[in-house]
Each structure stands twice: as structure tokens, then as C-alpha cells.
Image 1 (cartoon, rainbow, N blue to C red):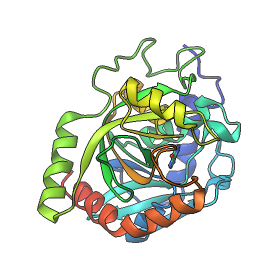
Image 2 (cartoon, rainbow, N blue to C red):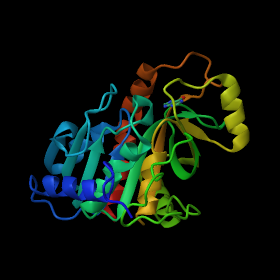
Image 3 (tube, rainbow, N blue to C red):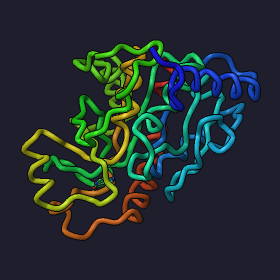
Length: 277
Ligand code: HPA
């Protein structure tokens, strides 16, 4: 056991104490991670206390355009939540353990469920830019794991990953999507290191490996959540068709533009999910 790690259990508990001191919020029912361009959901949080990442002990500043870099406590759909607008990516030069650290903090605040979201490139041929995809499983092709090193208090050494995304929560998201008339794809998210987008040959390889969508985040957070026994649900926003499938070159501007178009659908779906937790 080790509690000396910079992004471990003890550090997460210190961060949680500092956050609790700034809010009157009760324990969150869910921790939410908002991906690139999807931070607008934070505006639906009422009684919100927003804390810049730089003021959370253990957090560095977020650096990517489209990421506000705030931890927000408040109510969503009438339920207490903690949300991250922005996240830490390994491609920024961060340790995998830091990419997963906010999940440790949300768990230390009492969240039993993690909801992750991301912008992703679509691989499956039936996908279109603007689709929402329920994440049913993932491929960790980042070749990094946030749990390497000494075992943190509360973690298992060899966490089971046979059910990384909670089936019942996924089914519930699908029911809400149907009720709201929101089309919802589902599939396997592939996490890559980045920061380059993929080559067409890489996308063909990833398709053969079973990936339906791909991106540069989420996997470290889900691994930490599962190590802590949190239930996980997630949605990818397919912001573009992947390299070689898309008729044009990829850009972060396109990614953000597409998220803007689907933000309302995404926000309604997530708010309804949270209200039902
Ligand atoms: N590849 C990797 N990450 C992404 C993509 C993509 O096509 N779109 C959004 N994030």
C-alpha cells in the first residue's frame, strides 16, 4: 500500500477536504467528466460552486482549447453532482495517474457513479458526424495505465475489467434516449495517446481490432473508477468521421463545431439520466 503518490488516495482526500470547505453541497450521486466542447452542460447545474482547476490541490491548469478547466459542485436534474469541465490528457505530458486523479477526488467526495463523455472520431461505417454513442466497452491503446506503481489504498492490485461500463446504466441511458427521441448509437471506444490524429492505415487497423470510435481520453478515468468500485457510464460525441473515412483533413475546430451542434441533445440526455439516479 502507498499513500505517498502525488495522485493517490491521500492526495485525493486532501483535495476533497479543500473542495468541501468551499461548498455546502451534500455528497454527489455522480461525478461527471465533460469532454471537449461538451462543457455547456455545466450551465445547467444550479446552486453551482465552480472552482478553477488551479485552485484544487493536486490539479494543474487545463491547457486545451474547448476545456474551461473547472470543477463544479451543484445540482443537476435536482440531484447533487460534481462535474469536471475539462480534464487532464496524457498527450499534454501528464502522467496517466494524473489523468485519473480527478476521479479519485470525485470518489473521495462520495460519488458512487462516474459519467464520462468525450469527443471522438467515428470508425463504424454507419456512424455520422453528430451521432451520440453509448460506450459499451473500450480498448486501451494508450499503452499507459493510471494504476502502475504501488497499490493505492482502496484499489485492488489487479482490478477486474470484465464489465467496465455498467450494463444497467447503459440500458437506462438508452431508455431515456428513446423517450426523448434522441438517436443513440452504441459501441467500443478506443483510447489512443495522441496528440496526432490517426493515419488512414491506423484507422483500418483499429476497425479490424473492434473499435467503433476513437479518442485521446476517458480510458484512464474509467480504469481508476473501476479500481475504486465505481459504476461507470459514458457517451462519445462522434464529432467527425475518422481519418481516411472522412473525405477531408481533421481539425480540432471541426470537433468543437460538431459538439456545438449536438450539445442540446447531449445535455438533455445526461440531465435526464442524472435526475433518474
Ligand atoms: N481521432 C482522435 N481523437 C478524436 C477524433 C479523432 O478522429 N475526433 C475527436 N477526437
